[in-house]
Image (tube, rainbow, N blue to C red; front, side, top):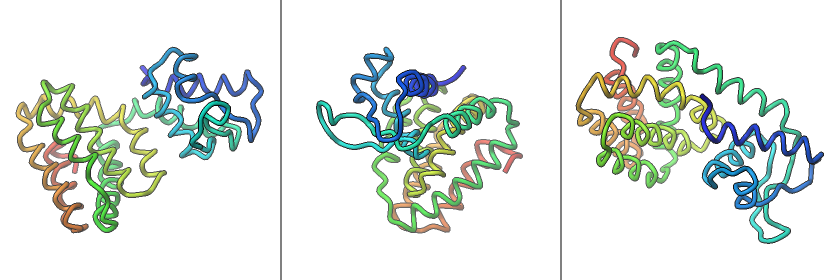
Length: 221
């Protein structure tokens, strides 16, 4: 099953095609789109952010007739490719997902540490993990933590790839948490990662991510 924001992506693509919008035209504002598509504003916001990352839209602040993102390219090819990626990821093996995560996250966390990136989102996700009730809720915030690492790297493509990996990550992550039973060590790993970024220690940050994934997925790192 696709995530809600993926459904919104497809609906926005259809909207652009059916309305005959061309480059330079403006989409309705976030609130208006949410009402028209009958979805939450957070799903619309995430879909628009993905389209902006792909170069399809350019978000501009404004009110009234000036509200809404501007179409900068036809979405057909990049959006179709993105949706194929999302749907195709569900068929990947655990070792493929872990290998890809390790490669991306080691680079992303090192870059975040080097850049002195802000860690507010990471700290907030960790706090929510501490308060989580059950594996499903824990993994929701764990995934947000790891996606925030990619965002903190400053590389929009890396961040988009990590967002695309989320569905594949989720199933395996829930299984890992249920297997471990206690999340204390996983939360300690996250604190180590967070501290390394705060300290600007890229080598320690990369090592912390490697050790964390090895703990969560023994035999695959």
